[in-house]
Structures are given as C-alpha cells and as structure tokens.
Length: 331
Length: 300
Image (cartoon, rainbow over all chains, first blue to last red; front, side, top):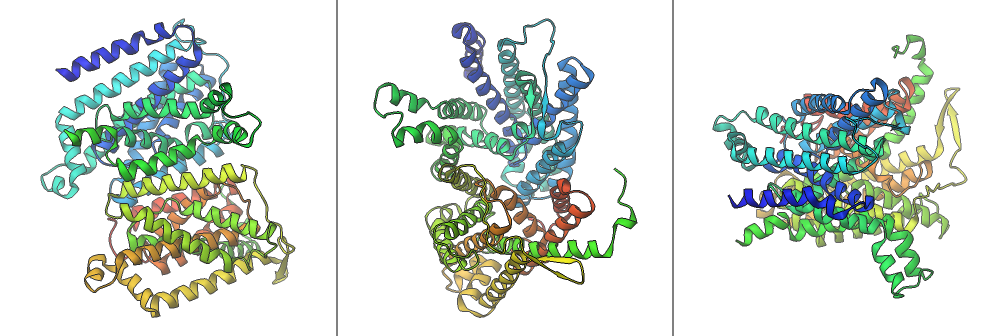
C-alpha cells in the first residue's frame, strides 16, 4: 500500500515536472536522459537482477530498436509506432537466438557469450549497406499524430511512459510465479531445476521481456535524436553503462536502477559540461589559463568515463549490493 | 555475396595468409596465455587484460621515443615493471573480490580497465601514435613471392622464447608447480601448505607481464591508441575459450588458430568481416565444445 502511494506521488511529480521547468530545452534534455537510463537499467534488471543472468550485451537490443525504427522511417516512411513494433520483433528475435546459445552456459561463459553476440550485431550493422555503415542514419523530419516533434516534451512523456511500464512489469513479475521462479534460479540453479523449474524457459522469458522493453527505449531515442550510428547505440560501453547504473542503485530491487540513473546521469552531464570548472572560473578560484584550469576545461570534460570507472571500483569494493541494498541490509 | 570462386584459392596466396596469420597469432597467443593463467589460478575473468596490453604498447613507445631503446630490447624493462604492477594490483584490489560472484569480479576489472584507458586518454590524448623503427616495414621473400615481415617474425620468435621459458617455469620450478596445483584445486593446494593468495598475486603479475609484452611486441606493427585494448580483450577471451579456460597449451594453440582464421577471412572474405568470423567461431565453440579444445571440465 505504502509502495503504491509513493509510486503514485512520484508519477504525478514526474508528469507535472516539465510544466515547472518551463521552456528550458537543456533541462528537459537531461531529464529525458535520466528517464532513458532509468528505463534501460530497469529493463536490464529483470534479467540481470531478478534472474541473476548478467547480460553484458544489452546494447544489441537497444540498437535493434533504434536501427529498425530508423530504417522503417527513412525507407518506408511509416508511423514511428510501427517502427517501434518492428524493433520489438527484431530485438525479441536476437534475444531468442542469444538465449538459446548462452543460457546453457553459466558464470564467465554467459557473460562472455552475451558480449560476443552484441559485438557480432554491432559489426554486422557496421558492415552492411542498408544500415548506413559507419556513417549511420540521419532523419530530417518525422511526423507523429500532428504533435510538435521539434519540442522535447513528447519524448519526455514517451520515456516516462516506458519507465512506468517497465516498473509496472517489474513489480508484477516480482509478485508473480515467474518472479519467484526467476529468484530461485538466481539463488541456486541446480536446486531450482531439481524442483521442476524449466530453467531455459524462464531465463528466456525474462530476457525476451527485458529485450522488448530495451528496444522500445531505443526506438524513442532514435526518433528523439534523429541520428544514430553504431558508436552511439551499439557500443559495448552502452551495455556497461546500463549495468553500472543498476549496480550503483541496487540490483534486484524495483527502485534501485531508477536511483542509479538519478545519481549518475546528472553527474556525467556535469562532468561533460564542465560544471566544476565553470564554477571555479566564475568565482576566480582557478584561472582559466592556468594548467589546472586547462586540465579542468579540456581534460575532465572528456573524462566522465574515468569517473564511471572509479565509481564502479569503489562500488564493487564497498557497496556491492548498491545504495538500496545497503540500506535494506541496515533494516 | 557470391561465394569465392575456386580460382581465387591460389596456393601462394593461401600460404601467404597462413604464414602472416601464424606470425600474428603467436603474439595473440602470448596475450591469451596471460589471461588463461589468471583464469586458471584465480578463477577470475580479467576484463582489464586488453588495457594492460595497451599500457605495454605505450611503454614500448615511450621507451623508444624518449629513451631511444629498441622496442624488442625494451621488453627487459617492460616485463619486470608490468609484473610488479600486476602483483600490486592483485594484492591491493582484485584479491578482495576473489570469493565474490563472477559478475562482481568482471565489473571490478571493467572498472579498472576504464580507469586505465581513460587515464591514458587524458595523459596521451586520443591521437593515434605509430612506432616507426628502421625495420618497421622491411620484409624478405621466401619461396619466390611469399613475403615475411621482419618485425612480425621477430615478435613471433620472441614469443616462442617466452612461451618456452614459461612452460619450463610451470613444469619444473617449485613456484610453477604450486601455481599449477592452485589452478587444479585451490582448497587442496591450500591444505598442502601452498600460500594460495601469494600464488594469485604471482599469477596476476605474470598475466600482466605477458599482456604488456604482447602489447610491446605488437606496437611496431599497430596503431598505438588509448582504446586499442578493447579489441584485444575480446580476442584474448576468444583464444582462452577456444583453448579451454585455464589451459596454457590451449591458449597457445588457440592464439595461433585465431591468427590464421583472421588472416584467412581477410584474404578470402574481407577485412571488415574478420572480427565477425572470429566471434562466430567463439559462439560455435561455446555451442559445441564449451570446455574448449584442451579444457578439463564442462561449461560451468
């Protein structure tokens, strides 16, 4: 009951937030990024957190949604929703193939195989002609039920809807028979199998749901940015960022991935836009031309991945269950 | 795409790809052995392995440009430095997750790899560098028109030497035997009085030294870039899985196979698709023989 109430309050806050922010495209952009990472990470959490199958190749499903939608839009000029549906189909197909190969394997092998599949998808897209190769796909104009697609608000609500959907599905799975089966598989595969749980069926089910939701985010992202290439949507770094967000927030918890995204995305943005440097320049703490100033301006802006690395190492060593997991243990 | 016609499979072309594949494969094997040793002794997948290779490339580059030391000679310097670096890395960080679930070990080493590659990006910028020695592009011909690149041949010979020494070390020396015992059964080795945590640090040190050596050996024929480790990481994993995770002989054979497969797919398909062929081979191994060519146990 308390959970539902908190969720409702958060949802209402999220719905009215763009009205409070007003016409500030930069802030709305950051909010969209937060919602996007929260959704991706929550979708990963279904297979990674609940079933305990750490997929290191979720960029493949994100890319499947983004690329299928962009190709459908630029070649067949379809409605974005049809592109999104086609993207889900492609992502589920990749998930099914991946699952049938990798779910027979455990531990190291599973992680390695999921990377190999994602790399095959990335290299294939890079080398094929109709995917635009290294140049990517650029979309000049898009129509969607007469909405103003140059405004960022439709995408904010689109991402918010997919996050709400993902969280609702996660909450439902958590309470359902499937959820108990998945957690049994996570805790002890052999014990779960001996109790009659069909391991590969439930693992594949979790991966398919996760892949479909990930691909929906990919579709929205592609129409939002209107430009995609393999570095932006299919890189291994994307898969790793999705996992890190979940780890830092708390794997296997409903709100952990959301918390991770709320903390990490603005941090990455602050580093990228050199917030620390600008503040220090403004108050004259560091001169813009001094070596430290040059480092802050040119170096640190490119180093947000370095900070990700440091946070990961610290998190694994000191908070292996994430922030939410840490507080839950304290209870 | 039409299948390659039989006329294209010219014996000389085939031999040429085979030889250059084997020579490159030797260096890959060295990186693979390092990763396999770490896996065998510690049961940890080291995702920072490619970035350790990248550091080896930069060490060779700076030894050459700043100290005017030949890249092959600089190995005498690079190997001990890398060993100490790896030993300390294990003692201070990796050691603490050795009993954690696999995914935590993977994420920790991914984090370490990100720190290394992005520190390199900050320190050395993203401009690719090229290590040009007087013999970088020199080659000689055998059997009329098969050319053998001199830097690749030198790298291959050094690799053979190092691998032979490593085999002897593992087979004969006390520490080598203790390493193998730890790899076979950690608990039993501990009961026999072997200091397994010291063995882990030694294994990681050797693994790091081999990765850095492979990086230094490949530096004269490759672009040196902070993010170069990425593709070598995936290659090293493929080699380890192909040979059987933890098997040193397997990694040697696996490295040579991957080198040849790469060269053949460049010649007969296209160089764009060579990595796809390597990963497809990787999945095929997982599907049909998950324990690898020389593996001991089933795919656990």
